Structure formats: structure tokens, C-alpha cells
Image 1 (cartoon, rainbow, N blue to C red):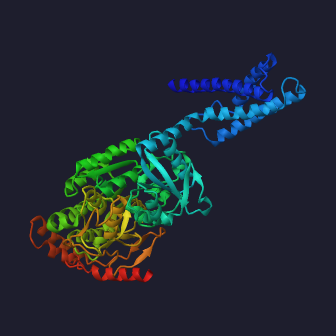
Image 2: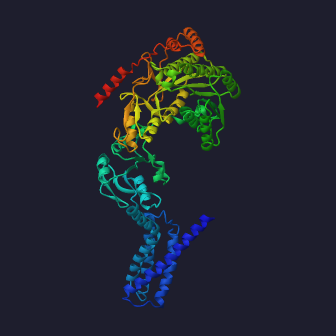
Image 3: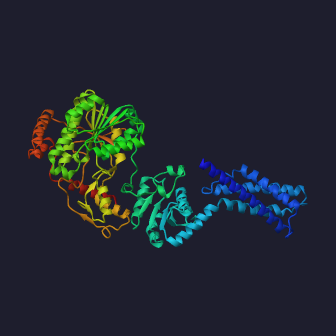
Length: 628
């Protein structure tokens, strides 16, 4: 009701303003063209007739539906068209009356004045906003902003900064690589140069922040732009995507900080959503470790693919509760069940499988922190190894269709307990996969995940917020990286290809130096690395490699339909020996014997306490130098 009153009030104001405009414009036109002769009765009748004509033409042209805040060039064009019709009608009257009541110049002067008044009334709020903006700029000295991108998104962004009274940003200059736009102005803000010269213009115009308004560029181009901006000592924000333009929503509130993921310089990995939908839709899906970084993202993506029932299982109740509440808000129609349970408890696992009969299982529950597992190896084995056996045994017994084990590249030639236990999990999956008649067992192996719990990025951000130092274990340590959504979407699609104990390896692009990630993150936060915030190398932690391999030497890769998912050739396992040593590992683990690592070594011969990653690192660095 209030909105209707507001619209009605706006139309009333416009009609009254137009009547006054007609009266003033026509009166001035008569006075000017008739050399100051006062208006007679006929002239006032003409004025009244023009009031009616004006109301009719403006109504037909939609000029009473114009919003003061959203008025634009199109509305000015409509005003020009409507005034043109009024001019034509008046000139016809002049011709038919043989200029008896007014000279032919009156309609022309009247039309010019009427157009000025009409546009002025409708643009008054925006004009006042611009005036107020420049008063505020001179008075309060708001944040000086450089906008990169003079396209539609840049125009909309600058418009909001210039016209909104709620935005404390002052656009100073624009950069764009389109040479046709150089020298042009957008809302009195000039396109001064190209993106490659960003450092020079940041210094010249004393820029406080950079806004990147180029949502249509690809990830590689965006990565290069982010790297150019990263050399400047000021924060960078970026528009996330094209959909805001389509919805007319581009504004300062949509800007986000540039993340390290933007600097990886590769396109976002996409999957075949229809394939994923096909095997998840209307199925009961269980996610162990559902409250963790990978598990919670699995739950998010599964929830969007219409499962019959999504079971979130985790031993940490806070994580399980948070993802449950989030999904209730974002996917209110999805059928959810959240269970607090430990995968170590076989009887509890069997009860869950017997009661709910999951058809697909994503096993993400695991201890994953390398240094902690070095000092608590028994806990790593209890949870990662025997917890996996519990879940896999139940999956096999109750005829689960697909069982997907989340693995890691640390399982390849492991130098730490965590990696070795994950390699044993792969062997468990392969063994079950060879013999299971109903269940497709697979493992999916990938590297570090940006932003996951315990990963370097959240740690670096916390250290930067505290003023440093930012700690890196070794200046030359490198890792493969993916975003959480990328890793999880590929895990989901790998489930489509699942067959008999296969190990899937995800393509993660080129490896990245951790030191470079720290350096770039400090720059993106507006600080100078090793000046404002130091980067300190603390030395490799126990069990940590310089370089993670994706494959063992004996493994080969077979491509799937998705070029980013490959299948590692399964290694031969002496199952009798494997079962015997696993029983030995069980005894040593649950009796807290000290020789648990030696027993792990029997199962995983490639398990080594000293890193062989240095040689692999040297090869990678050499290849990169040759490419440069």
C-alpha cells in the first residue's frame, strides 16, 4: 500500500511540475517572440490547450512512469520525442491559423524551453546527487578509486559511486585496453590509459583502492590483471560475474576482494552436471566427515542435485550442525538427516547402514593434519585406516551402489603417517573393489584445496590480520592447488565412472610455490611483503615434502571422458600378505605399541621418512626456467 502511495505521489508531482513548465515555457515564448507584448485571452487559451496536449502526449510516451532514481538517457530520448510531437501540433495550428494568433517561432522556442524543463524535472534528483557527491568529495575526502574496465559494468559501477549518497568512494580514473576508449569520460571520470600501466597511474592519482569491473574476461586474463594490480600497494576488489549485469545489479556491494585463487591463472574446472544428476537424483546419499571442508561442500553440491535423502555424518557436532543449518536455509526442500557418530565405531556404522540403506557413500572423514599425525600415529591409523574398513565393510554388506574414498596426493610415496594411512585406504578400496559384487569402490586422489580447514590460506590471512609474520616452511616448497568447489565437483563426477577399485587422479594444473602464495596474499591485502609484513621460512615440518607427486612410478594414467579425471593403473596387491600385516597393524595400533610406523612400512613399501621431493622439485623448477 505504501508503495502505491509513493507511485501516486510521484506521478502527481510530475503532472504539477509539467503544468508549471508548460505555463512558464509558453509564456516566455510569447514574450520573447512577440517582443514583450502581454498575453491576451487567445494566448492564454493556447497555453491551457497545451497543458492538455502535454498531459496526453507525455502519458502516451510513458513519461509519468519515470523513476527519479533510475532515470537515464532513454528517458531523455522519450522526452525529446514527446516534445517533438507537441512542436509539430503547434506548428500545424500556426499554419492553419495563418499566424493570426501566434508567430511560427513561438512553438520552436516553446519546445526548446519545454524540453529543458521536462528533462530538468526528471533528472533533478540525480543532479542533486551529483552536486552533493562533489560537495562530499571536497569536504570528506573519500577513498580514491581506480576502475579497471570501461565497459558496461564499469559504467554502472562509476554511476553508483557518483550518484549514490551512501557510497564513500571517489572514482578518479579508468584504465582499459580498448584504444577507442582512451581519452573518453564516463560521468566526468576519464579513461587515462591501459591496464599494463596500472602502477604508474596508481602513483600519479594517489589511488587508495582498485576496482576491477571486467566480469566477462576469462580466468587467465583475470589472473594477469590481478598480478598487474598486485604490484601496487593498495587493496584490489573485483566484480564476480556476468549475471549482475543481466540483472542490472552491478554495484559496489557486489565487489569482492581478489583471492589467491584469482592468481592461479587457469579457467575454473567445469563438470557435466547432467551426469552427476543422473546418479544422485532420488538416491539416499551418505557423507562421512560431512562437517569438514570437503564434506560440507559435498553436502552443498549433493543437496542441489535432488537426493532422496542426504545423511550428514560427523563426529564433530559443531561442523555437522553448521552445514545442516546452512542447507536448511539454502535448500529448504531437501530431505536431511544429521548424525553424530564416529567411523571408528563399527557397531554404530552397521546400525546406520542397516537402518537407512544409503545407495551412495562419499567417505571424507579422516585425520588430515600432517604434523599432528606424526606425533599421534596411532590415532591416524585408528581413524583413517580402520575407520575406512568399518565404513567400506558396511557398504559392501548392505549393497551400496557406489563408494567414493577421498584420498590425497600425499598417499604417493608418502613421507608422513597421514599420507601412508591414506595409501592404505586406497589399497583397502582396491581390495574391496576386486571382490564386491554389488558395490563400485573407487578412490579419488587430489592435492591441496584452497581455503579448506587447516590449509595455508586461512592461516596466512590470520597471520596478516595479526600484523605478521607470515610463516612458510620452505621457500621452494610447491603444491598442486584446487578450489573446494572444483575438487568436490570432480569427486562427484568421478563417482559416475566408478568401477571395481579404481583410483582416480584429478588434473590440478601446474604446481604453485607456497612462498608466492604468501607474497601475493600480502600484496592483495595492501601491504608490502618483507617490509610491512615479513615472510619467515621456518623449515620443513616432520614428514613434509618439498614436492608432492600425483602418481607412483608403477602407475600409469588412462583418460576418462572428462579430460581432467584420469585413472591410475591399479598396482598388484598380495591380499594374503596384506590381510596378515593389517591384522598386525591392528594389534600394534590398539595396544599403543611403538613400532606402528614400522608396521605401516611393511604395508606401504614406498613409505619413507626422508623426503625425495627435492629431486622432483629440481626437475619442475628446471622445466619452468626453460619455459621462461
